[in-house]
Length: 285
Image (cartoon, rainbow, N blue to C red; front, side, top):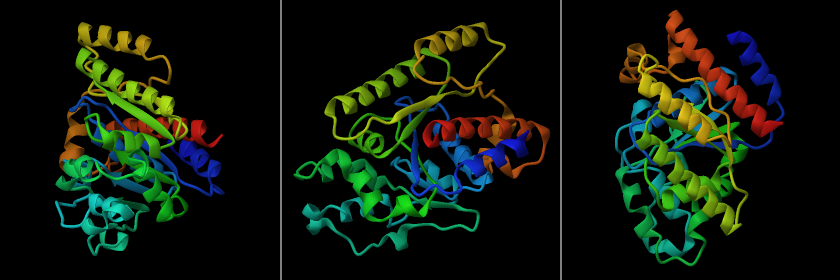
């Protein structure tokens, strides 16, 4: 089954000319958003896709999973350098100085704490502030160099989130089945509605909702999950990812579930392949 899904995904995108940009978002933190982004990227890579991971969270946890610590060169500097009006803030940093390349087919543009000041840095420009990331990807030909760009967004609302949503083709929403996570999903969906109202870009597609850290034995968790599944009926709700210790261990070791051979990890691999198979069917057909 794993081999079938991988081959199917690979055949569907052999001749694809431009990368599909997907983001994993939730305004509520602690839902496993970064974990999901990391494994979705590896799931895409396991099917033969060339993937760029883009860390847009000032906490840079996504970058740390790839073994990258805080550096003096990150996505913040590249975005500022891409804005002509901010020439006085430009630094002698090229994308080649920032891009972390790998032999696996997964590359990374890391984040840094400087991203927390992004909104203030661009507050006075005349160019459309919502489209800074989108134009950066286009000007640097990143859409031509990869099959997929996977963005890990911050657990906040604001200009960074708007830039991510304006730059992507589709969004996956990880969540924990509880009321706090539900509110976070509602808040992000409201931003999508705002983008639709602005009319400056095509609104990204809701690719689905990923239940995470699910405690199937708890009655309240089951009730909350069913409530959220009924509430958010504008996209696929994937099978829940259970709260399992070995999943957490893989992240602590900075490994994806695709780095393991044990059966428990095979089950997780299949779940992630099902997610990316759905994503590709929605974005490429």
